[in-house]
Image (tube, rainbow, N blue to C red; front, side, top):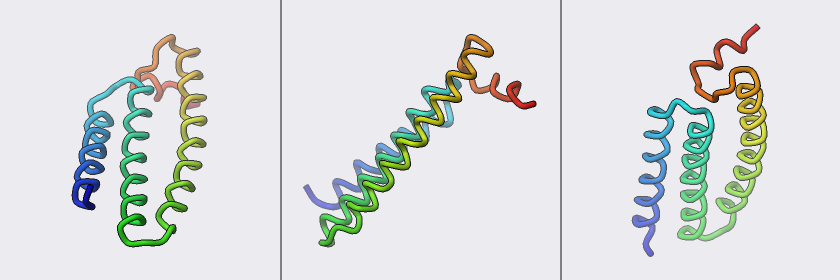
Length: 99
């Protein structure tokens, strides 16, 4: 598999994530789209590291995975709060949680 194939796959994954981010109204679907975009970026980091030699891209991808785990934890906590308040997880209901 060449670098151009990996970059094409990563751009397709990122595009699907952007499409999901712009078209979905449910918070869980939006979080999944953001995760898909982050994984596409991690794929580019690992591919560039593999084809250029060295491990800096792989280390950065592992660090980025750790950050996305923290993002998922905070995002799911917000989803639970939204569901408890409104019994639904639509994004337009989130503006009512402001105080």
